[in-house]
Image 1 (cartoon, rainbow, N blue to C red):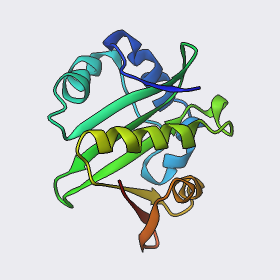
Image 2: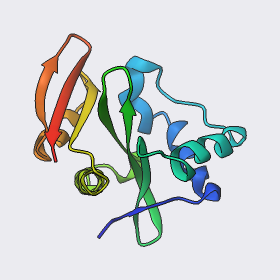
Image 3: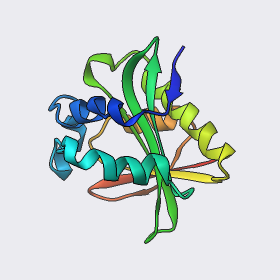
Length: 153
């Protein structure tokens, strides 16, 4: 069974590894693909997302038996005034149900933190739209670029 794990700053090597992995980040091709996350950025990112989330950010690794499998997060989008979910499963672990389990646990954590509704905007060609549907998210908007999904918690 998986758990949501609050990473320590020294655990951010895994986030760096995922974000620079082409296969893992292939879903992000419309937005540039891989993302640079060098060690020099870890401390400021960690302070903002883990130490001082101000109930506007939540971030956890998905872990099973001390193996990091991916990450889940949500953040408050000031412009749209909504909470946006995020799930990334490291490519070697995809297809094993970790995304579904992680997303459901993220929804539960958000609810416990007082978030009433979660959204996600997913690129139109990203197969994870099906994952969100299976976890109770409903489509509220479709453009030529993305699908906006919503779930009441």
